[in-house]
Image (tube, rainbow, N blue to C red):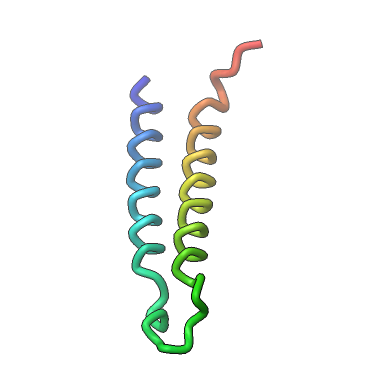
Length: 68
């Protein structure tokens, strides 16, 4: 039970870090020649990466606990 809590805390911390990193965007995002949908792409990429990381942590947490 304690190991699942560690995995959940790790997933939450990782998702918060990745979300913050993608919300910040690249350093060159403030240039006037950026594409109109660049911010949305960064947000979508951050969301996808966050969900993938949370899924990987959840899969690792349940790897030895599957009943069948």
